[in-house]
Length: 93
Image (tube, rainbow, N blue to C red; front, side, top):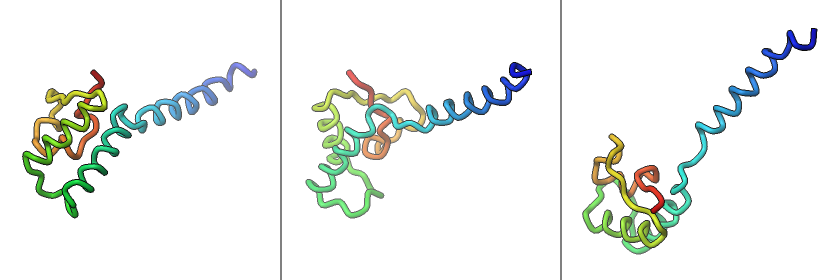
């Protein structure tokens, strides 16, 4: 009889583990946040709606200093402003 209840316990447990894994931050998220804070302080950014080449260069240099490189193969990462907005557009070197 106890083995009949196993699917009712195992399935919700498995689903909760998968949900937590899907919601986890990308590995570069904390370093990207630190670089964004440095960028805001350096350029006195109020709104990040218009991103310039100098903003992108700043973020690239900051993330490179922390051991990441920019990737372009993701659809979201092809845009210029993704360097400033998306931590998943960087991968550890």
